Length: 190
Image (cartoon, rainbow, N blue to C red; front, side, top):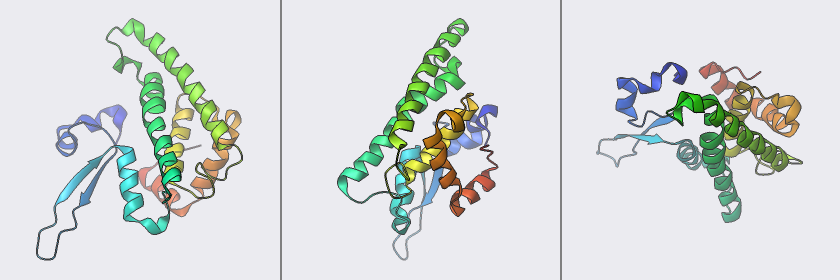
């Protein structure tokens, strides 16, 4: 799906997700024997990643202990709100935040300040860690791979300016499941 082309705003997609947002995941309700399974639509990245992590617990994508689990939620909430909505989106699509086209440049400039502060925060949090949450790959690392790509998209020299982020993203991209997803979606990272 190419969001820049408005594919998430087509009647067919809006019938699936009336918010017109991505990602969207169709899941089957596991019905009792004899009952008909019903498809449900799940939206919002954090919800989808938590669902997948809980559906496949052997993958160990979310910590089970209380404090590490809420730290994962802290990361994902901050990435989804502050970094995405209040940062990257303001740089990529400032016109969505103001009705006056002349104000778009100011929104973009302010968004870039927020983005740079956010990427500096990510970089410092990742220092000395093999993964965002410590010793294990998690849903947070999945989110950070998206932000790595967005950083490049808005013109940041991610590998040079954020070597800790780049190191962890290299490790994430070496994972077979990540390679498969990247190939399936036709994503170019570098």
